[in-house]
Length: 169
Image (cartoon, rainbow, N blue to C red; front, side, top):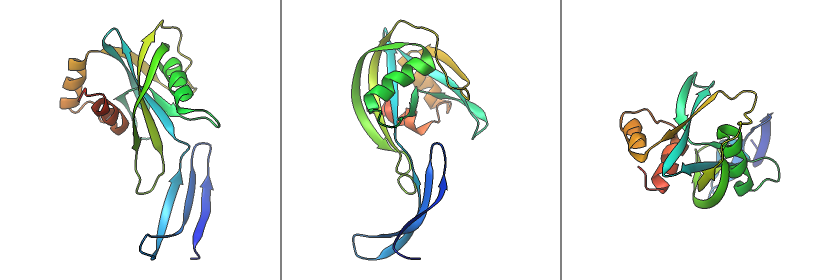
């Protein structure tokens, strides 16, 4: 295979490439890569409690506990994405937003970067969920979150990382 990369799949959300890259020591190595536009995740606070969602994830075939998050749209900033996702998934408005971290989800084969925010929220309205989203919203205390995590009920890696950045886990 020649040096460079070749697109083998182009989807609505992801692009998949295969090819070679030159490593820092000069060797060429084969890689398969998923190109992702990036995402934002928010820890939304309402009067000391945290807005969690219980979302059905079709890929794994079950509901899981998560914090609101979503993919950046073309030209959208992580801040705008964070505010939009909280409103769409929970119905709450964001009145204060602070970036607290950044993670790469699976850097061995994917360039997805998730920007992590804390937010103060207010004024619940009707959520504007996407067609494929099945979500239930629940306000949880920090102790309830720790108990869910300790009992193996919070398994979403981006949520665990965000809670760690915020000092909750």
